[in-house]
Image 1 (spheres, rainbow, N blue to C red):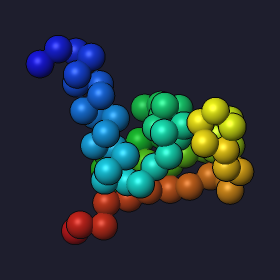
Image 2 (cartoon, rainbow, N blue to C red; image 1 turned 135 degrees about the vertical axis):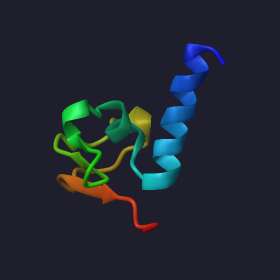
Image 3 (cartoon, one colour; image 1 turned 180 degrees about the horizontal axis):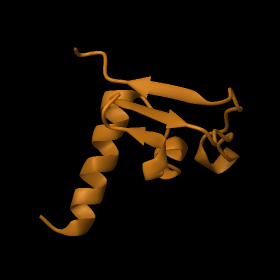
Length: 68
């Protein structure tokens, strides 16, 4: 698998398993990820541009895996 395909796969898996928005996934940083706690925290939630589908800012969101 090429590296580019791996990035796309990872992006899609994060979207499918968390329900995160494209803009939130694109802004992810390692400091937002707690592997031990199995959570992702989005601290910099911003509205999407009209080109990205509009929307509005609902503030920070936290995602976790509920398949325990």
